[in-house]
Amino acid sequence: MILVSAMTLVVGLPGDSDEINVNNSDNRVSTVKVLIFDGDGSMEESVAGLKACLDESNSMNLSGGIYFDYDTSSQINSNTLSGYDILIIPGGNSATYIQGSNIDDEAIKQFLNQGKGYLGICAGAYAASNSVDGDYSGWGLASQVNTIDVSYDGLVEITPTSSGSKLLNSSETSLYHQNGPVMYATGSSASSFASYSDNGTGYQGYSAIMGESYGSGRVLLSGSHPELDPQNSQLLVQMILWTTKKS
Image (cartoon, rainbow, N blue to C red):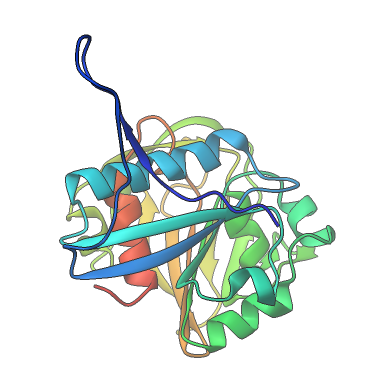
């Protein structure tokens, strides 16, 4: 297991002494402990973007007083998940996630049953869905969300639904999309928080962000990348807060 703790480096101007300032939660309302998968199949840029968004939130207080204490791990199992509030599976290769031995989906289900959260972005959304285009099954963390495999690389516009107005501040948002899923519900327990408002993916009107409960926990899936350019740290923060029941 590889764990990397978050810290912010503050380097003095020429002539000043160099200083390392480790962010902490001493003056925050509460702390959310985040585990990011950084192993086989994960996309380096996605992991780096997630860290950058959380660092920005901690330094700019985008979360209204909540501090994000994050680590990364190349293995996801009951031991590595212990003590965390949310697991984020980033963009990457969903087939590797599902077929590989580095992610124990049964451990994730137990984690969710304990009231914890899961955020899947792009490949992480494919892997956590019920099925991918009817071709193969996901882990079923969002058991009433099916995904459709899309081949599109570029910007997309997404519009919040009434359920997702808090996530997106009731406004249309441009996000980077890299072959991520479009989604649709197969039952009433799944909620759509945003839909694709342009036809870049070829599936205008389909869901871009969906959420569902699993046991006592919550699962949130995003087809596009809030952590990649144009980076939207505020959206990512709101996703985490919903998933961890902080909003």
